[in-house]
Image 1 (cartoon, helix red, strand yellow):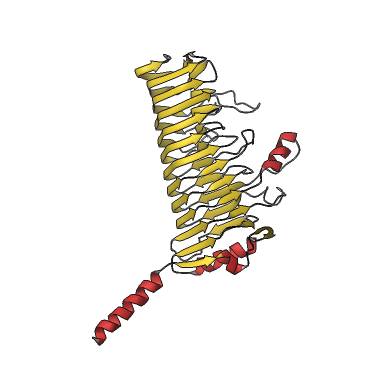
Image 2: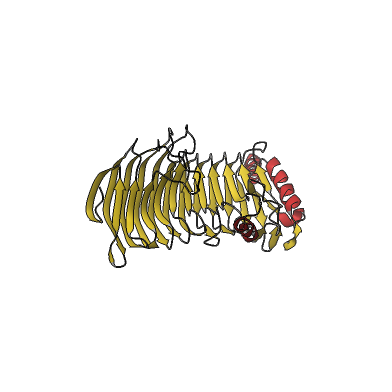
Length: 386
C-alpha cells in the first residue's frame, strides 16, 4: 500500500511538472488603457516564459495595449510549446515614426511550436499611407506580424488592421497553419500585402478574409507546399505568385494549390508575375481551382514582363513556368481580356491547362491574349487561348 502511495505521488508531481504555465501580462505591469506603453511588460513576460522548461501560455486579456516593436526570439529559450492567447487589442503608437523604420512591429523567430490565438492587431497605418501618397520622405513602414526560422506555427482567429506595410509574413518556416485570419485595410493603402509567404514549406491558409491595398496573398521564392482554401479576397491585387526574378540566382516556387476562393473587385484574380530579366528561378506544379471572379480586372494572368514602376528591365524573363492548372474558374471580368498569358520568349510556359473556364465581360464572353504559352484546353473553356 505504501509503495502504491509513493507511485501515485510521483505520478502526480510528474504530471504537474509537465503542465502548462500561464502568465498574464497584467501581472507584469501592462495596463489595458491603450495609452500606457506596455512594451517592457510584454518583454518581461517573454523573458520569464523563455526561461521556463514547461509549456507556456501568455495571456493578453481584454483591453487595448499600446506597444512599440516586439521581438520574441526563441534562440536562447528552453524548448517547449508557447501559446499567445490574445483576447484584447494590441495598438501601435499613433506616431508612425516610432515603428516605421523597423522591419516588423511584432516578430517571432527561432521558435518550435508557437501558437497565436485570437486578438486584434491595430497598426494604425493610415497616417503613414498618407505620407507616402503625398510624396514626402517617409519611413517604409513595419510589417505587422512576422514569423521567421520557426516550425510548427499556428495562427488562428487573428485580425490585422491597417498595417503600415505587409500584414503577415511567413519567412523561412516549416509547417505553418493560418486559419480564420482577417486582414483589413483600405483598398488604396500602399504595399499592404495581406499574407506573404517565402522560403517556407508546408504552409496552409484556410477560412480567411482579406481586404487590403495590395496582394491578398503573395507567394515569394522558395515556397514549397502551400495550400490556400476558402478565402475571400477583395479589395486587393488578388493572389499572386511573385514577383519572381528579382535576383539572378533565386529559389523556385512549387506545389501550390489555390482553391475555393472568391475575388471581388480586385485588380487581379490568380496571377503569376516575374520580372523581365535573367534568373534561375521557376514556378511549377501550380493549381488554381474552383474560383469565383466578381468584377475582377485580370481574372487569370501570367505576366512575365512585370514592372510596377518606370525603371523596367528591357530583357527577357528567365523564370520557367510549367505545369499550371486553371480549373473551374468563372465569373465576371472588369476588362475585355479575361485570360492573359504573357510568357517568356526565352523560356515559354509549358504544361498550361485551362479547364472549365467561363469568364464574361459585359454579358459577353471575355477575350483572351496568350503569348509563348503551351498547353491544352479542356471541358468548357471560354475564351479560346492555347
